[in-house]
Image (tube, rainbow, N blue to C red; front, side, top):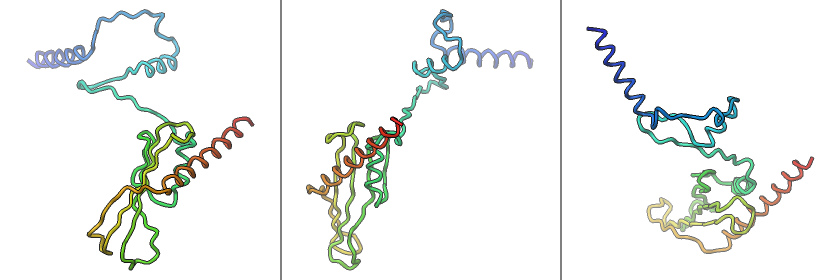
Length: 180
């Protein structure tokens, strides 16, 4: 009796594993498969092969490193005076927290600024980034009545120019290091 249940369970599990394969009887040519294990792994990664369970999607990652992108590093360094609410290298965006330049806490209008930097390309050029600045003006100290507006001023261009200059300097320094 126990062997019947065992065989039944074993058969069901085997059936599940076999049905998960797209073509279990696929013939491969030995000349197409690399002998070296590392080469085989590299080829499988390039082709996007992996293991999926329960019909899940195969998800591959983008492994870019922010330390090699001078534009990203320059943006972080230029905006290091304020905290970030979002800094996503893979998403290509940096959003700062609301910050204020007010020196006195009893000012009538409380004004705070938020800077958003969007990366359009990794190349260091004028159209590589877009800087958007929002301001929040509150009519009372308790910040109950606030209005948020997009700022059209030279502040965005100044931040963009500072980032581009810093990125150019970082690129020049990295090129000097690679030549040595």
